[in-house]
Length: 119
Image (cartoon, rainbow, N blue to C red; front, side, top):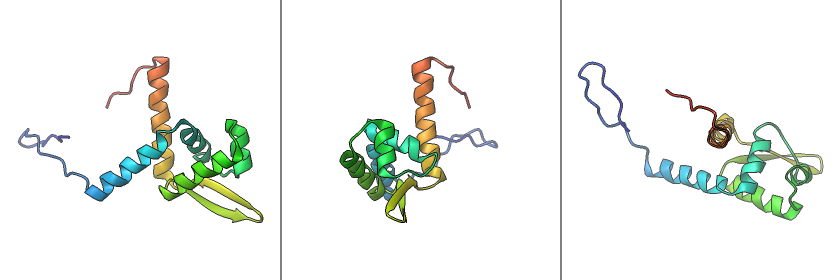
């Protein structure tokens, strides 16, 4: 990626991410490349849900949803908190919520033919 230098007009190289940053991003994208996990993340980006609610919302079996949530937690995309006997899950932070939203907004443009946003 290049950034324009306003004074000279040159295109200096942008500072590259570290290996650890790239590996972490690749793992996040790997986790999101599964349709069930992406659907779960869409829900979790808007609020907290327990496993039963998530399973019902996406039409998947509870054990399957639990396994997906465990993977998402290990990848640092989801966090959980106990509320009595229930465990509630949500997207970890605003970065994760924006990542999910942008991925699905991009898909909406691709599928629907809505014009792309130019920078």
